[in-house]
Image (cartoon, rainbow, N blue to C red):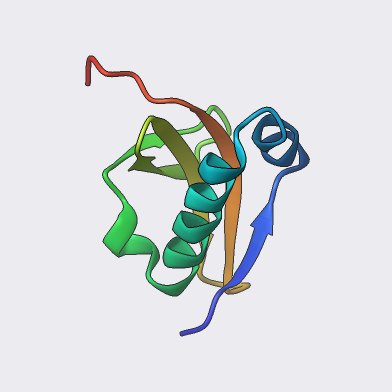
Length: 86
């Protein structure tokens, strides 16, 4: 199944603070998530609204995304520095 990739504006704004190499790394991971979201889920959490948020660790970043099977969307909702204590 081919998913459409949607990225939150705050994720784009965060990425503008990164080096070009890190931006390319994250862009590749976004494409990988789009192609096979469950293959790139390291763990999950539940958002305050109750939906499941998949977390993918990519280098030093934690990418939060939701899989919307009904609309066939992958929604990249957050990105932050990964917590090394997990």
